[in-house]
Length: 290
Length: 290
Image (tube, rainbow over all chains, first blue to last red; front, top):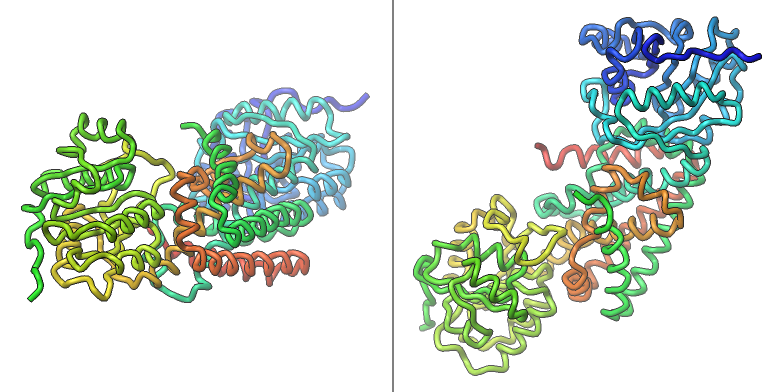
């Protein structure tokens, strides 16, 4: 019979690997809800800051983190992939740790999780609460409150591990949503990665006009539509490179809509143009009710 | 010698034609700063509401508005064009009214203003303070506060008319920016119309995925990037049709950036991709400091 794993988050030691906006916020949100909080960061200054500001109880390294009952991988996606590859090459850990990652893309991470020794209980996760700012100094305990937290269980994820991941999500006030890694990546490409890219293209196209007066003309509409363009570039590069296929699909749908719009503009048919715009307006008005 | 026109906004009667978000807000912002405020709207219910809520002192029609010293055309661009055509066909007004429009596009309106009889003193205007909501109920006196208010004087605009338009801009707390109509339209296409279209394409591309779960995945990033898609469709159709050439140019620059991004994604060169993203991130971080 299989090891049942741990049964109570309040009794568990949690190690957070990557103390940026997400990992730092998770540590803050878990304070007092688990037995101990350990933190790992490749930047020693960040680790020291996390200890000094009581974000974590202790600093450790990836090997040391394997003593914990819960291992949360909270670095950018390609760093998570590297860490999973490391774990796969190491001897089995002493206990049977739950391994939860917070990466914004899931299919490649799921594939890497499948390579872990059976002593690990892995499950993918993605809290839908990005910000255009990054780093531990921006972390806040309330970041996950009422936000969707996607879980992508693998075939090999044991039932107890899913339950504990749900406990963790409840402890930080988020709302769980279970998806396959592949469906997550399709949805995230359209709902999260495409908005970032649309904002980036907007800033580049405005710059491309070559008239510096444009920044004085940019009002609240430009401000909000372009906000995500200021996101962390390392993180976004990792996301693009680990979700290329789905993002390419989203960009191609976007490109097709752009082509249709250009044709309507050439046609100058007010009614057809209005119908094209109205479909999006009606959909958008039905979302995000205050 | 030419009629000098009126000299003091506080002594002038102002007629606002089109009592939507912009016209209504302008009337509210001018309360107590001019001698009388008249309002014209094609919808009698809106006119009645404006009187009942003391947004204006009296309702009138376009012909009646010609008694005023200041005529503000605040309807969508194509309605402004129709009103200017009407005025051009009528007998000269009794005084020498300043005609200021608030349309979001300026070249076509400038061309129509050039057809007005010499008894009018026309000047183009565009306050850069859109909202994704519309209508008189959304109007607010503070809408223009600290916002850029573009003025596009014509060759025929007399100096006194420019001075009075600057007085009006100062009275509502906005910041004037003088541009030619053509330069305004280029800048507005990239800074204002393109963000709206990027938001619209984003909502349509998300819808095009054909998976309703997407709306649950859409978090604050999607919310802000898509906000403008909910804008008033009549207004936006008018804007697209009266600024087609500049908007086509902006969309084509956007399309070229999209093509470059797709090529970088195919190449999977992390460094080149990062550089593409970082240029926009750096520019965006330098804008809109809190």
